[in-house]
Length: 133
Image (cartoon, rainbow, N blue to C red; front, top):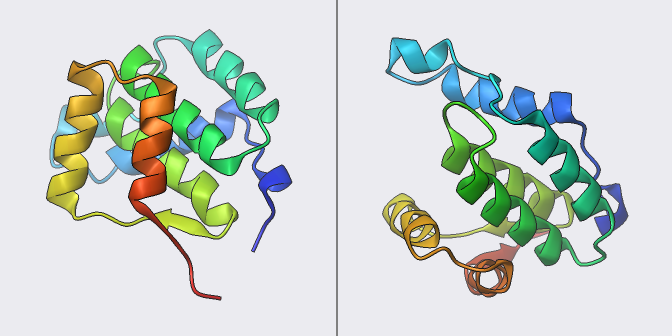
């Protein structure tokens, strides 16, 4: 298990997350848009921001809220946000633990109600579990 300090990523790695998510899409057009960024600067800024944070849940909440609401990718922003946030948690020994339907509903609520990072933090704390060692 990695420590919270080991949760650093590059723009290329975040693009790879998006690409891998979209390569399995049933929509052929969407498959071809994997890793296509609308706003690389947002991802660069986000990576710098999470590097400055100490708490793994702060990092995951920031990633989830910022990617889901700022849409730096052409497609797959919500899915990328969830996977990236969960990767950060997993690296620190936690994981998001909700049903797919609840996850979908809650992430759409996050977008529609424009949840703050603090609200996403609370949601992650309530809906994550420690991974058995």
